[in-house]
Each structure stands twice: as structure tokens, then as C-alpha cells.
Length: 503
Image (tube, rainbow, N blue to C red):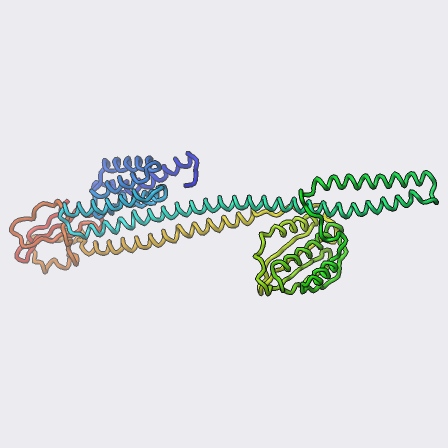
């Protein structure tokens, strides 16, 4: 179960004890078969059951059953029925193993059958006991077990998801660093080329006879400074570049058209729409990397498919989209997406956004939206916190539905069963006013309209012997809910011989 603070546990136990004590207090009227001694004993027992329920979950259930059986062999008592439901649910929720509960359920059924045989009653109360056992104990216990297992499954799932997310984040960070290393390599290639041109031009000025000695000396210093800057750039980029990383295969000044022509020359069916836009350096290199990644993925994962490269300018943004249809060959399976992670980092650093996914009719699309101007600040990398929170809310809703729908069905079944029981009991219920009008010596036909349709099939145990000299005795309930007291009407020669209220 989820960890809660000791104060919250104590508050929950106190509220549970007060709730379970209410039915016991309602049965405190001595005229209704109760007494204040029984109330005090019942409340004390329930308090002890709540106190030990966390350590021994089955003990409160066993004690409540033991307190209910002496009052009614049917196990349904107004004082402890709510406690049976609550302790049954908590036993299923708190237990690690189910063997003890199954033994307890079997023992309750066996003891009920044994008591039925010892008291000489029919099997009707025992079948009612089995129904009460199923509805008031086993069903809440099953709901508790389900909630426990579902909670454990959800907790294990979130632990696995967190671990996978951390691993995925580590892979993404590694790919971002690798992409930044590639960006550093691109910077070395482009800036090194520019510095080399500066050094060449400065060297030409250094030997130009049209310049004076001071100007030639300044040109020589400029050439040496450019050469030293090139060496320092090479050293810095060498530290940033990954060990064993290869030099970029794409020339730094290759355009999108050059990439498409080279892919077409290698046998790829590719078409280009739109011209090369004017973008700042980082965005321009990101655009070429998107096209290069899209063409590489198409050649690798969809051989033989037609590829369409579209460059579209919309206001301050430039959109590049690479679509590839379903390939004719089998091709290798899709990769883990590490290249797309690195590409996403490059596009993000350029101030743009990257999206990718399968097409409805088959194929794959890679789309990047890049700004025409360099971004003032790089936006933060997206995280999965929002998606994780949304998934957790969905799990909570599913859990609430999984709990309340079975509980509602169980409550409806319990209400239906209670209604049938009340209806059957009411057929043997003799109203006190009708009983008060009965007179000894009246013929059965004179009082039959005041009597219920059916008497009790089996009289309650322990009522004592019937009067002598009577032909038959009929027993009727004096109250709808309680088994005692009962009215006993004995007849002799078709007339009422005695009318007694037995407790």
C-alpha cells in the first residue's frame, strides 16, 4: 500500500472506528434486544479490531464473524454487517498472501454448517450465511485484492517508465552532445576555410612590391595571426570532437540542390520543389542536415521509394519537408531514432522546430521549420513532464472507474438481495395491532384475515416446548428484521387455544 504518515493513519483508524460503531449504537435499545453492556462490548471489540488491523489484517474479520454468528446463524446482523464489509475489504487490501483468507472463508462456511446441524435448524439459514459470506466478505475482499494488485502494477509501471525515461534522456543527451560535436566540426571546417583564405590573401599582400615595408610587415603579422588562430581553432575543436569521429562527408558549402543531385546520381528517385532560401549560417546548415538526414533515411529504410523534398518560404519562416513513400524492398528495420535526436538538437539550436512521423498511406515525413533570422535565445529543450502528468491523470481515472463500478454493482446486488429477504420475511410478519385483536377461543376463519400469508417454516431455536393438548402451533415474526421475539399461535379443534409472545 502507498506509504502514509502516522498521523493520517491514526486519523483514518479513528474515523473507521467511529463509523463502524454507529450501527452498534443504533441497536442499544433494550426493547429491541440490545443493552448498554452489549454496546460497550461491541464498541470496545471494534476498537481493538481497528487497532490491530494493520498488523494482522485477518484478525478483525475473524473476530467480527465470531461476534455475528451467535446473534444470527445467517451471519447478517444489523450491528456488525458494515464491519464485515469494511474488514473484508481491508483484509484484501493489506494482505500479502491469499492462503489465510481462503482458509478463513472455508472455516466460516464449515462452522455455519456445524452450528446449523447442532441447533437442529434447516439448511435455509446456512444458505443465507453463504450468500452473506459472498456479498459481505468475499466480494469486498476481492475488490481490496484488485485495488492492491492494480496499485502494485501501476507503481511498478511508473518505476519502469521512470527508468526508461532516464535511459532515454541519457541517450538523447549523448546524441545532443554528439550533434554539438558535429556542429563544432562544421564550424572548424567553415571558419578554418575562411581563416585560410585570409592568410593566403595576407601572404599575397606581404610580398606585394607595391606596398611599403610597414604595410608588408603588417600583412605578415596578419598572416601569422590568421595561421595561429587556425591552429588554436583546430586545438579547441579537436578537444570537442568525439574520439574517432570521422570528418564530415558533406562539403560545408554544398547546397540543397547539390544534395539532391548527388542522391539522384546514386540511384534515388528524388524530386525537389522550391529554391534555396537565404538563411543565417546555423539555420542554413540545419536545413541542409534535415535534407541529408531525410535522404539518408529514405535510402536506408525505404529502398526504391520515391522521395519528395519541398522547401517553402512563409514570411519569417522557412519550412523544409522530406517525404518518402513505402519502399519496394524489405530494407532494415527502423533505427532507434538517435539520428533524429541529434537532428532535433541542431534544429533547436538554430531556433526552429522538428517533427517526424509515418504518413497515413505509408511512408515517412520529416519536417523542419526554421527562422530567417538568428534566434535571440535558444528555446529550452522539451521534456516529457506534461505527457507524464497527463498519463498519470488517465491512470487515476481508470482506477476510480475500476473501483466504483464494481462497488456500484455489488451495492445493487446487495440491495436486491436485502429487498428479497425483507419481502420474504414480511410475509411471516404479524403486526402488533393485529396480534392485540386476537382472542382465545376464536375460530380460525374469524382471525385468518388478520394473519400473514405464511407462518415461519422453522421456529427459532430455544423457545421451549409447545403447550399440551393443542393440534398445531404457528409462529410469526413480531418484527421484520429481528429473529426474536415471535408470536406463537396454537390451535385446537379449529379454534385459537393460546397466543404468546416469546423472546
